[in-house]
Every structure is written in structure tokens, then in C-alpha cells.
Image 1: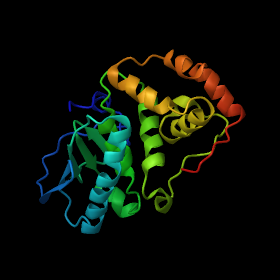
Image 2 (image 1 turned 90 degrees about the vertical axis):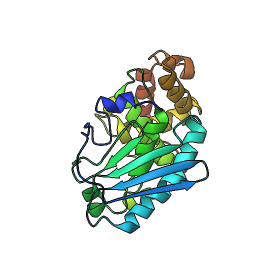
Image 3 (image 1 turned 180 degrees about the vertical axis):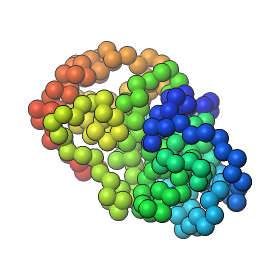
Image 4 (image 1 turned 45 degrees about the vertical axis):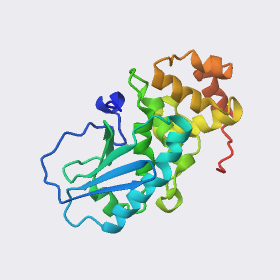
Length: 230
């Protein structure tokens, strides 16, 4: 798969582009299960082998399910790099996810960072997509496919006055969940496909739901109740 254009412009969990680093590899493990492979590169002295195993297990749990639903033609092999030179949380570009090891020291249960980041590989958007929607869909998939969100104390936030659909991440994710339940149960799938093939336009919301995204948001703000059971 080609480089993930949206993340090459700086859209990632941290919102920053990571630079290539010259830190030496301390270990490299290639793991294949079924038709998928992860190459795990560690550059962090003392990085927990337990966390490494959990990140790998998360990849094999969530990535095939994300691929099946959204993009069966996604990459079959991805790289995970544990990089102390990266000071965000995680970022994805061209089939490589770079993780800050300190994040997992401070937040050892936040394993579903994997779920968000590998969705960016599945997305493979190359047509200047709206960043708020890209990140909102990635957090939507973390909610739907996540394996450890409860232990990580990660959840979608209740609606609060002053929010907007362009807030991205979890705010947008909850709006998407609500819109599926109130307007079109296939909404996220259709938006994702259009973003990938370059046909996305704001008018698509009207075609899929009968309302503009602003009209949908007004309905959400007026009555934001949603079924949060997966």
C-alpha cells in the first residue's frame, strides 16, 4: 500500500508528523498469523516484553476485523516501531506505526492505541480528506473493535455544549455512532469508502442521510442520546 497521505501531512493520534530517527534497533521480531504479519522493531532499552506481546496480540485481533469491514485490500504486513525519539503518543505513515515507549510506561493499559493507528493503514485515504473525519472514524473503530478500552478508561464522551463535529477524535466518533443509529446504519462504511476512492464531498451526507452534516449535528446536539452497547 502507498504512503498514507493524510498522516504524511501530520494527522496522527498526536497530531504531529514523526521524523525518521537513527536510533539503533535493539530487536526485530517478525510474527505471522494467517495472512497477516507484523514486524516489531524495538529501539527502546528495557521496553516491556509483556507490552510488546500485548501490542502484537492486539494487532492480530483488531486489524483483520477492521480490514474485513472496511478495506480487504489493505496491507498484509505492517511495521511497529518502538521509538524513544518520538515524543507524541503514536503516528502512522506508509504502513509503519511509531510508538512512544514512555506512553506505555505511564498508560500500560492503553493497548487500543493499536486499534486507532492500524485503522489509519486500513483507511489509506489519499485525496486530501477532512482531518476531523479521518480521526473521528479511527476513534469510532477504536470504540467498535477495541479490546481493552475499559481497563484503559477510554470511552466516548457525552455531548457537551460548545462541541462541534469538527472537534475530531472521540467527539466526532460519538457523533458518527449517533448518526448511524438515527440516520443510516451504514453511514461510516459509506463515508470511509468515499474518502478512500476520492468521491467524498460534503453533499454525500445529504445523499446518505437526507440531511447536511450541520443539520445532523443540530439534531445530535438537541437529543444526543445513543445506545452505547456494542
